[in-house]
Image (cartoon, rainbow over the protein chains, first blue to last red):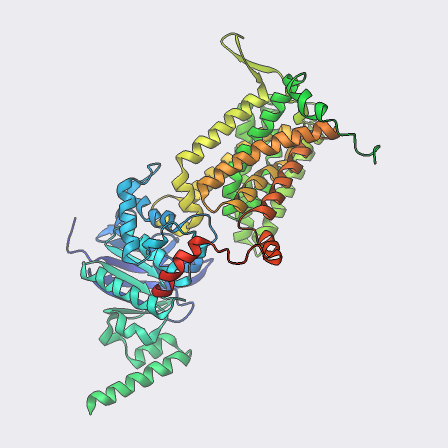
Length: 259
Length: 334
């Protein structure tokens, strides 16, 4: 196995839903050990990109390589955090059951989780401060706790590349802070993390690199180079309500630096 | 009133069936249990996957599959029957998806269109080939579980071990098959029902699992067809799971409770039918519905009971201990 291969590489990745194109020619090369944010307006295809990387959507063109291999071969090295609303939280399972699902990929068909898998799951729950909730029915959790259950499940996958779809959506400030600490810890352990993010005000502080996405990659690179007013304008087009705050802040900071 | 409802004679309703009429009672109650239990186990997954209506659809649309199988094999042979059912079941699922994805028709309407059309085709085929196909429309709709004891029996070791009427044996085997598959693939069914995207990313092929589940559903429905019919089989698919999910929030316990529901409803239904001298399949479904209602009102999670308790003052000071224990870290964590 090549060790020099990037954690994730896509080439000319295009996806269409019923003839309506959603992603065009996405070329990305994400090096190992980076915390990367995907930002862009609603309908920019951020979640679609994550799903396309995992081979869950028919591709119009292009290919995906994870650590130099096709996704299907490297799937055990990929952990996934879906959007919180994508599942039914009234489902009759408890917190432990959900976290154990993170072990399923390592188990393969038919085999049941072992005591060792349970120990790993408990450990992951502890990392997100949810160990006391292990036996709780998942509907009796707050939004932030539900999000942390999904994070614990991804940790239990013991992957090298993590794909996270809006892990900060609808969580309280304390949970958000806890999650970002956790992501930085993962990065320190050499993991690569790709995060769909909707909040521009924090994007600059959270991520090493940014992908500006609006159906195609508007720009991609180190946050310092990419997070500029004109590039964000280009990505978000006319929808600038939130952007204006960010740009003003940017301008103020720049003025401060010059003085 | 007396002319409407037969007098209740406890001896005739509860004792006689298990003494004088044991030979009649046992196959019927067992058949009822096997049908409701097999349907209930699969039905749990239909409910969790929001596919209850698809169960409805497949229970009807296996009919043309059965007729075609009948035409090919000349009689209702088990093998041909199951193949016909699986083909029809998978075809139904495919057609629903095709209509839904290739037109502006939404899923619920697509389900309605598909199963009614297929069922109608089956009805026409029964009429058209009445000479070759010995399927009774009444039996197709309502089933004839009461006639089960009269069917040919199956025996092993050259007749030395009599297993009982053929439909009961078949249904027992189908129930065992469902139970074994649900146990073996518990993990795969769980993850693909709860989070399809994760299941797909882990390589568990949720679409394959979906079609296998639909095929198994078709087999169960066809095996249950003759005894409970196309309409009542829907109740046996949904009621056990719906009742169990009222009571528990853990899937393994829910599965066990569904089996208990199956046993109680087939027993209760049989005795109800003995009393009222009515359709046994109908009575079993009514008993199942009564159990559902009881679970709804009496379950610890029931809001109805809680409201009464609060109103009567029972509930004051009483609190879920788990709720209390978790409240402290929740406050700290958030």
